[in-house]
Image (cartoon, rainbow, N blue to C red; front, side, top):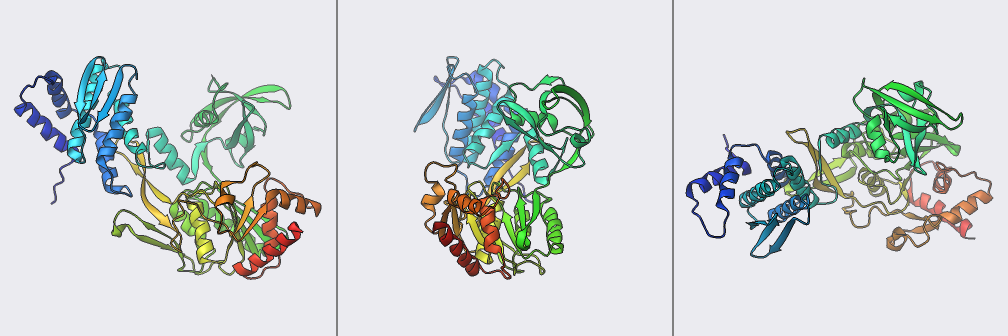
Length: 515
């Protein structure tokens, strides 16, 4: 049996040796050090911190710089203290913390055990000198957040509440009331209610605004705060007071939360046997919902698809592979990931023998299409005959894994990077569409995607598209906008998947618009 000496064990041993062997020196507060070593030896302090450090050391996509990690942790702890009373001074020979006219010195190197000892010393110093006004838990969380913040944009610490929410969101279901809410002009109100939901059954209508939740006024509340109050465990009650502007009256309902299935896929049949599929996110239920609509599209006699991934922030990797598989030949590369070591390399290939790989497809992306959206878009561009239209995607080329920590909290950690089938790392410029749509209706200046999209074959302005289609009597809406109409015309009368033919048709349409 292998025995692993953990960082905590190293600290305990070094703490014991300190008690037995240390001799006084003129510039050291030895009473402080003795109590610190004693407290650390017989307590569970910083256990969660150490667990997360071990996790980062083992699983992070890059080999971590422990000096950088612990520097960030200590800086964050010091920032939790009143800045006027706590000052951190750093120099090559070591660092000094001055707090309430007392000082503590520490020196970090690249050794994990040593740096853990130094962090413990700072942790107890800050707690002791705060006269217990600064809780140990607050200091530990600050140290954890410091480490996670030093890694990358997407790695983060999740407290128990955030961890549960993260799991709930990826599962695609939650305990709630079943309504979409938004804020406008400082008013929080209902956009729509979902079918078979407590909100729908209670008769709540679109445009009804919120006044109170469980007796708490929601005035000046942000939308996320309201959402957190409305959500909760299934079979629990929530009392809401609403105002209905159409009748100028307020009313109160007590509703019982239940599992709400989040519909991440929408489908609409368009003219000329074109099916419009909008995927809003990649949760556990996404492919299941997609299969239902693909079956419906087959009954509708659909000959081509518009796959709209605009504004889709991503989600689960395996769901993106399953979604892409429906439009690719079996065995085709969807994406591959690479981690820190050679053993971390993994390929993901198309799964289904019966697929729509011969069906014409246009994929829509924009600057807010990220992560799993970019995997699907990149796979269909590189491995299939799909035509990409829109803006450069967001450029999130990394994979995060959510780990549960023993105290009930969690960590979202970047564990690998992904690459499109042709080997492109999309982190720099995102997935580049073959037809660039310049949103000049919203943006006054040339967008970044227009500047960077040198590889784009064709560029069109939204204003030109709108003017052209509206002249022809086409009624454009938020869902059926100019880009969707362009895609529908490209797919019109197409019988087999061919990027070349789709591009030729797009050029014909563009020539008429420019003319």
